[in-house]
Length: 404
Image 1: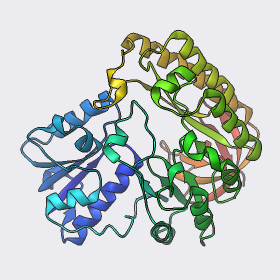
Image 2 (image 1 turned 30 degrees about the vertical axis):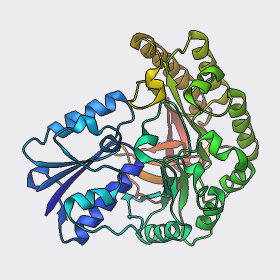
Image 3 (image 1 turned 120 degrees about the horizontal axis):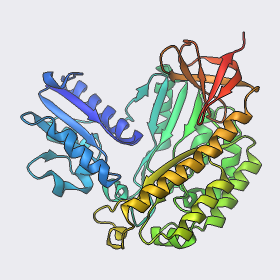
């Protein structure tokens, strides 16, 4: 059997695709780069927004006449859109393997490498009850991997040359709540393992880490961990947060950011905002802009709300698309003001950085200890640590020159 795998969406899907690939290879099959050579096309889908779902259908339609298996979140949460198609009822390698008639070993986290970065999924599902989210329908309740299984994946990743470990799941902060361990305890074990690597933590919801902030401060201050926290707020309006099913207030979120900033000098924040949530008013949106001004995250994901089938928010009165676009543009402009100001303030500084990926022609991308992006205008090997002087700044990144 020759299979071609096309992956969309988040890092969890990338790990799932690696598991599918492993199962195929262990069965004696092969995974090819050219869909024209394949006996079966596996499309690992995302369904996070309405636009994404439409894009998935377009991607699937490219392969009419081939055997196509649809996997991932769209197959799980929106099977009614896949009438007449072969699809896996749940995300993950197990369900695709069954459709292919092959075995899959669930006792090992698949090795998922992008250059020198290893993506390690530590859990599946979440404990949230957000009114707009289709991913929780697709991925289900929290199921954490055992620590020894994760540590084995770390060991194999480092042995394969990984210098950066991206710890991921639907909500990293909930890790272990179902098996009697917490995230900071797992991270301390990973930090203690041999190897020269940096840990980047994936998204943590505010409500999942609110009770372990002091422990997380201790973890973030370790030199093996990027001082980078992705904590989505979604809205600066308490009224909208309530409608979203987000169990915290804007003030509580700001307090968490302030506590982390106070305990972890130089920490960088990433956050997510949904604009145009049902019934969002101009005043609600102004509160979101205030949140961005006060919290000053340097990485921001802005999504225009779109109703997802099966979610409570889909039954709420929607906001005009024109207003969503206006608010998205305004929030993006404000975000760029914040980030460009910070990047300019770093010009002249000397930083130690880790080269993580190729850049545009003749450049590489590196990360400083707070995961800020530094573009270097020469070709350096991935995984190399260098010292640079920041000589220029752009809206969302710095430009560095290697110090000889």
